[in-house]
Figure 1 (cartoon, one colour):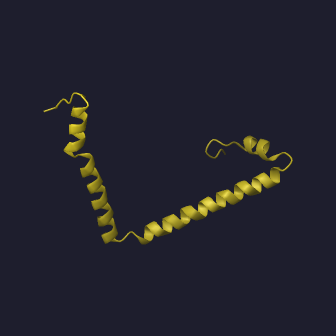
Figure 2 (figure 1 turned 90 degrees about the vertical axis):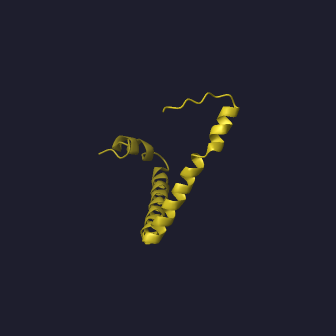
Figure 3 (figure 1 turned 120 degrees about the vertical axis):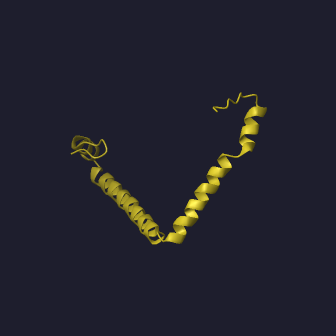
Length: 88
């Protein structure tokens, strides 16, 4: 079975050489570290799943969207000479 495009023959070619065992151990160590970080982040996210935090994050996203919808950006585009067409 391939994992993300890696075939067993690819792994054999990569690790069947002088120093291949050390390369494999390094790759496994890095993969374990990545998994630990993902698990830690997941646990933190689960702890923050209370209602107040979700509402606060939603309000932050709404504020960011409002900044994107402001008229200053539209005025800047008009000032640059870009034609703005209304689809009414």
